[in-house]
Image (tube, rainbow over all chains, first blue to last red; front, side, top):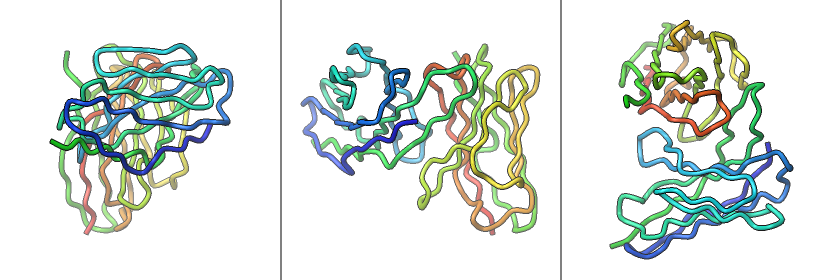
Length: 112
Length: 112
């Protein structure tokens, strides 16, 4: 699976949009971009994933650049409960077995 | 619907003992994966089971083993426990392992 690079930490004001970047310059054509987050001492929570088109769900939006070498997770109206470590993961979607390779992620702190 | 259930939530064991952790996936999910999380190494993949077969394995010694039953419930076993095995053990399930994973809250294992 391709390697990802994320900033170590970011801050965001409550109510504002949080934009979390991720670089994955070695991504292959069959690899998806996944985002998970982990609130302290809980299991990671799936947020969203995409291949090349932008995706939106009730939690967030995922913007993938046209060359697919980077992406941005957008939390449109951050709340204090969005404070967590956010992981960007790139992996191939196959039926022959899969694993999530977690990096160090971005610690997002939402401030009141 | 019920989430991924891991039991027990907390466990204290002595060096040299063995331990068995249990995971009940979301109903209908056939893929179950196990991860170890420590402050030093982060989240690391242990193994994945699909339809009672191990189809993916991480870089852990043979002391770490697992199995999956016909109802998709999974167990992992660690034999001859070492102090370094102290960690949060997380289980994740998905329908086929190619979509988003749902994680449990984990089992906190402390080896003394």
